[in-house]
Length: 185
Image (cartoon, rainbow, N blue to C red; front, side, top):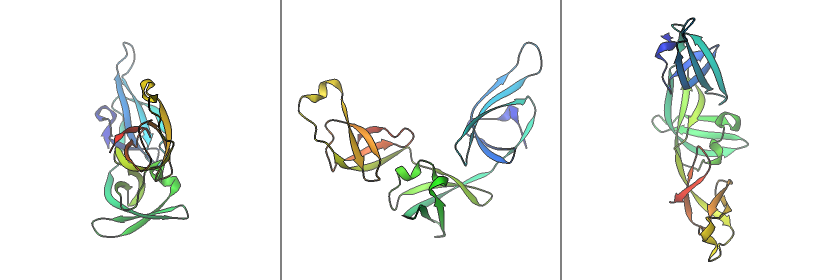
């Protein structure tokens, strides 16, 4: 058990049987009345963000979340199979458990999978991934003055907006948090 006064961004806690990651916190001491801590918590399983207020000094249970490096093997019928790179054990996760991760997964990619009490609860994708452009319209000379973009379909099936100079077959860097084009790889 830890005091809510000791909360920090990124800390995982257990509230009402659910595991949350602290996104934001603010210790408030009003001129009149008792102090309190206003928090913004992200549910680790669902990704939903919830605002909660605690009385100063109130105690919450700390959740110990273990992250294992696992290699993505393949997808079959909505099940995604991963292998632990240390002991070669395999697990499978449903598409619902992965959130946006399937949009960026390539075979043999190593990602972090979070475990709480032995069961997987979430994934940690790298901040950026390199993906190949498999389909896009050709850019025309002279169209670059306005910073215009065009849609490009990538090897995982997602479509992102890219600058006009990007051609089919090129490898680009994509931000996994926003789904936006960053640069050529």
